[in-house]
Image (tube, rainbow, N blue to C red):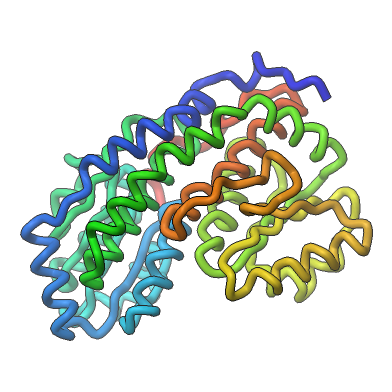
Length: 349
């Protein structure tokens, strides 16, 4: 395929290439406010029975790494989509629970309703890109990512949220803030390193995906953030059928769809389940399925990730999927990321 770069070189691509700057901006704003320190102290003292993590779309998927960090630290953590929390699990609005709400705009329909439904019962930590938003103003404490304005599909605001949430995890569990700052500072450089070859990545992915009619992204653990967000942005940016699920879930039915028109991106993920993921990858290949390995040891250049600290990997894992959105757009000659029916901020529930 000869990629039509003139079609895809729009505002969405500019946002993708702006991610290193956005990450630097977010990193420069990371601090422990008085309010955040107080909530972390209450959490350490056992004042909260549960930590409820909530958001919609990519903001929800970005919570997976924080969720796992909190559980590993001995806390009771729940992930609930904001709409489900409001309408079906509103019993979780309780002074004994702490809520972490993520919304890039801080003013989506679900966030506004959540603030009203909670009515000050549960303390809320808001993670948002917008300092003057209802979420930032009404939260007990805020992490403002300040990634800058974004055209359409979440890219720089998403990676900025991941950075802010990893910082928040260390604050909440009273971890080593000096070490995590050192690790997170490297996110911008690793992102820039990968994006430096974006045209080559798109070209190679265009050739690899030319026969694909449907796409699956699979992984485990923290990689579920990229799996969920990745399938969402492919649908948003390209109007292309895509589904994200755990590697284990893929074996329970969707494995039957393996073939040359079903492309499966398998995230290598963390060491504890890497061999399970590799086994799935090899089983797909043995059945002549279209698949590639996404990780630090990939043999396919667009899916080869830099060797980075564990805390930075969720940021890097979404980058190959962003390249997929550009390649699929180039294949059909449309501008990636230009909405037809959606808007940047969802104002109706």
